[in-house]
Image (cartoon, rainbow, N blue to C red; front, top):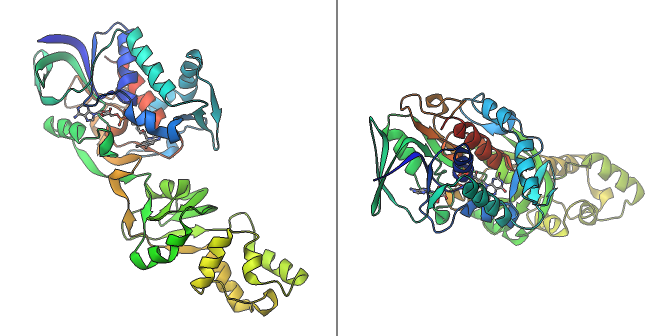
Length: 394
Ligand code: FDA
């Protein structure tokens, strides 16, 4: 049986970074993953360019039953620390929008960086590892692998959530938590597109590919100002992904399709200047033509000139466009979700080290726990920050 100071399960963002930091601090670390390659989600992330952090990271951008939990780790290993590391590896980056930082070239550079950091820490990495059992005795944690038995004083679970099963996601972390008596909060897909009820989907399917700026509001009052995308399955785009984490089944979302103008004032001005202009063409000055045509076919944009539009119809039109109420049928689920909400209850863990209070030597980092960030690099920053905090305690 091979013995290590620490075993880290999951060679994703959190696991690789934690293993590297602990290895560089002199620990003998074994990093295990069930996949063929490390960092598979990183490679897929940010459209292949990895949105690796955000300039405006702050605890308010994270959902958790305990909103204070993430504060310590985020303050001790910040976005600036990670940006510094990226810079040291010569990776060029740029801010796309809203503080979101992406690699100029490829997400692969982040994986290469993490592999290099693991090598610097002499981390032993074993891919294609299936963990058959985890046991604990006086000597620490013993893992039965396919064809091997390994043990360590400390065990770090960095196996992520349930999103994208095609990329190796498994409930392993939740099962280990439960095995050691830790509470696991219900999970659900987050940062995920909405599906629509059939009649509505049929009406809007023609708009697949149309994107508009929007302000989207959930029933709990959470608001995001980002773009919305019509798809052949429903609604997506950053606005929808963001609000999906705040949406519960059966609820409505309210969408302002014209957040940048005062629509009533715009229509009044246009009417004064061009009374014979069609309402359709007037709206097409502010919205994609396909969207206006679709709304007209649905009877929500009257087939009239501006001077024919009476005050009541104008008010109804304004209400439709700035407060479009949509009741999603559901979400696309874990298959396409970027993250998993819920997970290992943070009340079970130390916010300083991520160690389980009931199981000394057992740690949980990254997405497996009940800390979920907004879209925009916040989730990777949580992976780096929680991993760093944990590594200090290994
Ligand atoms: P992660 O899921 O990265 O790693 C877990 C690892 O554990 C995987 O390698 C898995 O194979 C392994 N594993 C699971 N079960 C196991 C088992 N039983 N045995 C052994 N190994 C096991 N975030 C962001 O901030 N910016 C972005 O640009 C994006 N983009 C993005 C795109 C897509 C398509 C997705 C799906 C997600 C994102 N995210 C993101 C979210 C981000 O990828 C996510 O929050 C982090 O990868 C979480 O890091 P973890 O290390 O916790 O889990």
